[in-house]
Length: 170
Image (cartoon, rainbow, N blue to C red; front, side):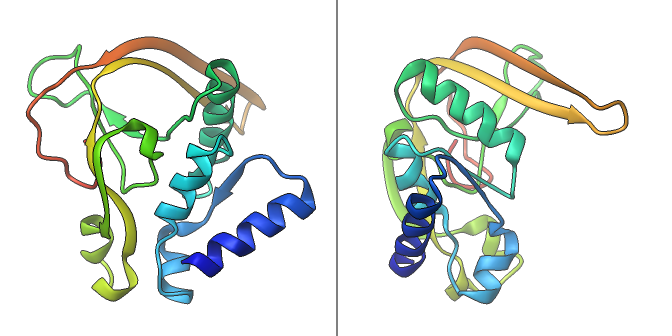
């Protein structure tokens, strides 16, 4: 994992790239034997936004938030299935969140990834509980058929709610 981090850092520096969208699932674990979550977490924590799953629109949102706040940004999956309350969303990921967002965090094997792959290839995710507090969010998307793009920015809060995460942060 350290070699991967060094190669990505060197490539980004020599190419003058400021953000990245990495094909992590499942290419790096199959070909290199690691998940890059911790490397990407460290990059985003040092204000070099990095999104997984080659999510270019996601990293653009991360970068916009990072530039606006001058603090790390993160990429989360979110949906409105917290019980019957349509005003609460479940936010999680498998996990490359910057340390900045965690109340507590450890590096571990990915429970999400190991359901599909050997455990030995899934080390490197950040597992923990996300801090509660104010949150700004943004999501960019494209409609390739019409050639249009859209953005959805907003502000809310991450409350302290008892929740057993499906993946890593929750």
